[in-house]
Image 1 (tube, rainbow, N blue to C red):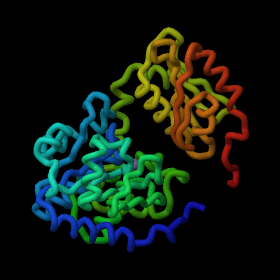
Image 2 (image 1 turned 60 degrees about the horizontal axis):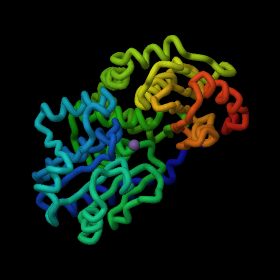
Image 3 (image 1 turned 180 degrees about the vertical axis):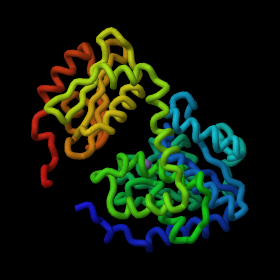
Length: 349
Ligand SMILES: [Mn+2]
């Protein structure tokens, strides 16, 4: 069921490369825009695009307007590495001052949603009108999808990094070991660690090609573990506060009187997926009488549907919700009652 090779045809990827080449010839500078709260997939694909533009001898930069401390520590490490190497990373302020002009091309990566980019809508509308915007995404259409002419929304792909990896190989573009490693990290993140529900044969094929091209898998593993290793609260949740529901669901319930951040809860839930579980939930007090639940699933359990029961939502693999005036322990008990077998999606194998 995971072989979707028919939809993953090479022509669309080739057309993407041709469009980038054609547009590059028309502009003097390029700004690459990963989504807000940039993650491994957004940054990995942005870096590979940056190199591609640089080879065409165009001025290029990556627009990131997040405050660095809010980002995943592994993503922060990548940002440090590339700025040390002289990559031009700019803020939205910089962009408006120096690059908001018609001779600048925007390439959005890992998103096509207005709501998820750090650029105001009137600027985007001008770019749409002058056809100086390319969007590359693997997420399906949404409420705020930007209607650009050069829109490459390939929702059968695991990740923006898989799209870009395939494009680099099909166009015989050479890239360094470092770029291979960043692309691998993006694929790894969005395919849920190359698991069955997050990936298909093609994903494995392109990930394999990156390994052939010296992607450093051990480094990717270190990047993913950075948040865990540096965070006492996450370690404590995973090591000491784990409850198992019906053997396959990990539920981390924070202490009633201890405060957690939503990021910590999300990372704690993420890190549980390395165990043999179907899903994981991290529940913790985030202050102001609010308890947050972060839900992660490997695909057999619908995290989004379960979080809807708690007033939140999300996708099958990743979801969250916030609950008022209940203790984490009480929310944990309610979750146990909610986790009925009907939230399991299929048991075909
Ligand atoms: Mn992505």
